[in-house]
Amino acid sequence: MIRELIQLIALLLLMLVTGIFWGPWFSLHRSMKGFSKEEFIHIVKTMSNNLAVPMRIMMPSRILFIGLSVCIYPQKNSFEFYLNGIALILILVSLIITIVVEVPIVKQIEQWEAATAPSNMEAIQNRWLKFHVIRTFTAIISFISFASSIIFSKT
Image 1: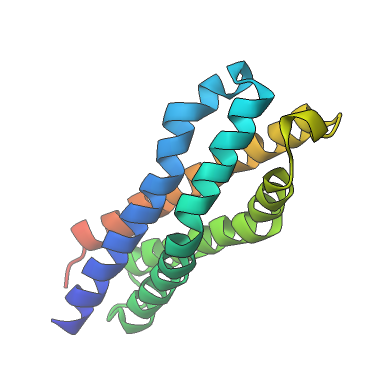
Image 2: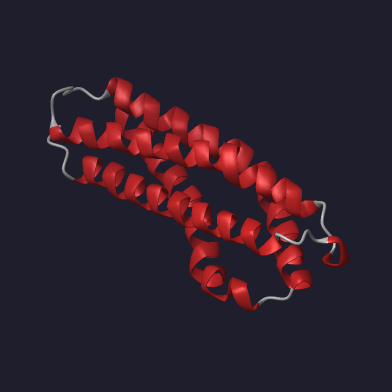
């Protein structure tokens, strides 16, 4: 019963964080080039203000619960155990992308105003978008891997 509760919490947190990554990609990524400087900067600042605190709680929590799920998984040589491990590795990759690439770019953009945006704004925006796509898909694959480990579990 404890293992199932840990898996449920891990799956919920993984779904929420994956949705937070997927939503902006799905709704904004393809349109981002069409936004004016003012709109782009406003969107980034708004998203950062809305997500900073919840993500500081949810991202480490999902890693903790998936890590616990890996540790207490009973069949360490099973395919499902390896799916758990893959999910954990991929969420760590998404965390590294967030901390090393995404957050520093967002912090930089938060300091901008349209009139003072750097001349290489488009290059910075392209880097941010590229890594957001990578982070989104690592999270989606992590979710699929973790959910599959639960669905196909033989215990």
